[in-house]
Structure formats: C-alpha cells, structure tokens
Length: 183
Image (cartoon, rainbow, N blue to C red; front, side, top):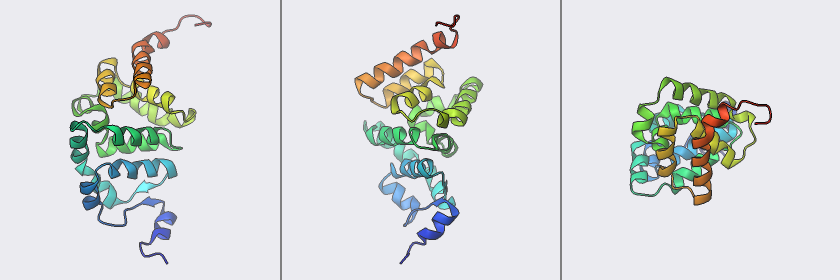
C-alpha cells in the first residue's frame, strides 16, 4: 500500500507532506526547517507545494521571538551536518528562512562580501567533516563579525559552543592573514 504516493516521490527525489503543507506549517512552524533538513540529508528537492508553503516562515520567526530557539537551533545543526548541507543552506536562503537564523535585519542587509562568503560556504561545506561545532563555525564566520555576533546570541547555544563560536568570529581575521608557515 502507498496511499500518499511516496514511492513516486522517492523516484522523483521530492520532499512532500502527506497533508496540506501550509496547514502543517501553521500548526508546527519548525516543520518548514525539518523539510529542508530532509532535503539536505537525502539530496532531494522540495515539492513545489512545500516550497511555496515555506513563505509562511514568519510563523517560525514568531516562535523565535517568544524565546524558544531550541527547535530552530536543532534543525540548523542537523542541516549543517547533513550530507548535502550546502543544498540545505541554499534552500534556507532561497525560502527566506535564513532570516529566522540570522535575524531579519541581518538577512536583509547582507553585503556583497557576506553574500559571496555565504555562497562559497554553500559550495564547499560538504567537503568538510560533518562535525557540528566545526560547521557552525564555518557558518557564522561566513558573515561579518558585526552580523555574526548577534546571530550567535539569537540561537541561545550552550555556553561552551557559544564561546567557541564567538572566539572563531573574533579571530577569523587573524586566521585569514597568517604570515608564516608555522602560523
């Protein structure tokens, strides 16, 4: 039995919901990120109905504003450590959901340099080992320090992770300009 035509979706490499995605995402906004995580884990694409329904990401933003970033943070970490993390990041940007992670003002005001670094990250992140802290560091150092620090605070990481991310963002300029082979 295949009442939801799942075999056909697998054949077409599509992520689709078994019910109306808009209604699902209204009930459970973090499911938008879960759909992107599944795409990042499998290499599949979002069905048009799912992609279109992610335009309601403002509901997820409201969840963050109520002080509950844990579900978003967990999905972000899972997207970043997926086999196709670059694809997942591109989907977050393409749907506008990157604003939930970085903050709306930050996402709207990405400089050319930030955008170039983010695109480079998307193209290359899958070449790195899928270690959560390492990939989080790559993610936050791909944007300017001024934008990264509030974005890190926004996600309420545990103290150890937060300290490592802030250290990475603060020291990335030094790392980029190492002068000697030993350094």
